Image 1 (cartoon, rainbow, N blue to C red):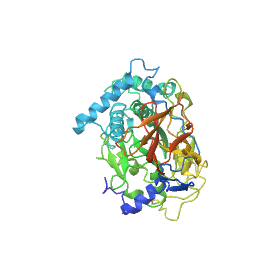
Image 2 (cartoon, rainbow, N blue to C red; image 1 turned 60 degrees about the vertical axis):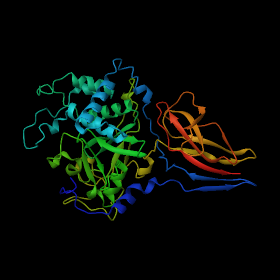
Image 3 (spheres, one colour; image 1 turned 45 degrees about the vertical axis):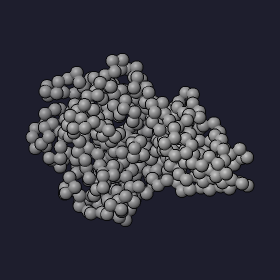
Length: 424
């Protein structure tokens, strides 16, 4: 796909990386000196935390959904992972692999009417109108799956025609069962998904409708904020779509970036993604929209594109949907832990409190010495919740050398460690 017609502008890998990764550099070292001892924060993983909170799913609840007594969602997750292994000759190892496996299964199983048959020149197989029953299922992933699977896809006249929202809600739920967080994202004329990668330490765009995700030419996966920045500053043409399966790249309409080459001029993320146990009725796809109040000088309009600032989103032109122009307010990194309210040198050592931004933090841990040393739990958090949580004060003795601290959630996801060096 890198040679497709919409990839019109070459951009250096370094320039693209600067656009995408500029806000994700670690906080620089901090130093302090007491009368006889000193410390240094040698690595702090905390990027700017978005001002707007994210109500993440309790992943332990997703794995034991009261609305799914037969563990039907876990069964389809296993089908998706098995299909991935059969088609690729290897198991899904990384969190991106697992997200690809899930989106590919959903794309093939919860068939979107726009892509059947794949050739857009042929008559459509299914109705464009989704079943009204979907509106009654409360964004509960297992209910959407079971309802859709009650139909035969070969019975075109009765196929319920799930749309992008239903598909990507199911992807989010299946990822929750695998221990990963997801959030719906509305872009121009479409609802996709981001999942939080604990290996890439960022949100990554992935979509079951077009069955694809996007990378830089060097393979770096991209989130919607990355794609927004690349759109506004002249790098979107160098983005490479990675197709997972059906619909394939045989027809260029099967790639969202061809259908909407500037589809990331604005985006709206869902800040509430607690869909299990009957809570999905509260989901809103339009919690907050990121937009550019004026096209930057580097923005290149599409042929015939009209740059207006008050157009309705359906107009197809540049438009403002005025809620926020601060993309970082939505860029909520889930695997971060930070020192809260500074550090206090004492005669005994260094005293500080940790704040974890990992949803449903269940415990705080510490490790002394090199990475081969074990982690030790220093505090168990009663009643883990979706909000940031503070630890009790932690005291680290002078002369401890390298000390790492982290948080762990209730399904064993971990934050990036914060690393200190303490000298006697």
